[in-house]
Length: 270
Image (cartoon, rainbow, N blue to C red; front, side):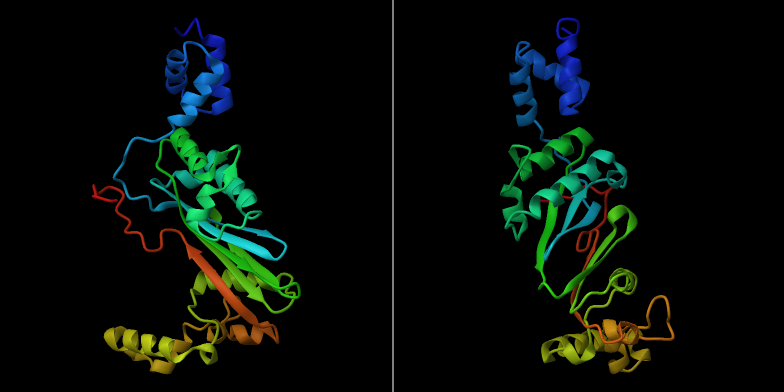
């Protein structure tokens, strides 16, 4: 069979990037019909069911004019984020989805990329990498013309940060985004907190005695961007560094947030 289909097999493997055995089986099922074999491979891209927790992968940001999308794609191993094919997947998703109206994972998965829906495209890449891969989170953020974005993308995609400023910031935008990646603030400023947020922080403060070495006010302000010591000049606050520029909002995506990281355990997951 290999000799019979040798040229087709080489061509099919180069075009689809699938494994040699998968291509061989597809050609055999298609009785040597190349286009039919491609369809068989496209339909059979599901990876063997796994019960490893998909908590690895990468976060990502794509920006176009006044819109930005932040998303997270998860897989099962640390090696995934280093794979060239996986990085291409992130770029392809970003370049495609930024030009759609998708605002959720469900909507994003129905969009089209390379003549197939995004869900199938992700499965196809997963089959080539021998991992279950999922689009877990997807957000769309808009700004006004006179506002600006600041971004920071941690190497390997462990953290992605997007900040909206009320005016142009040049390099300061990235610096503040990097600070947010490092210091993990939850709020922009203490003065912006509503009573519900204050009540929530009061509950956290009273439940954990380790927090109570500081006053409640210090505990809360330490989680507010404006009040934090600036990463590169800790003698100054972020508010002082901004020098009249206002942060409207920020978004910090960290890889695996909310996922229990137990890759070696057999878990009964839906």
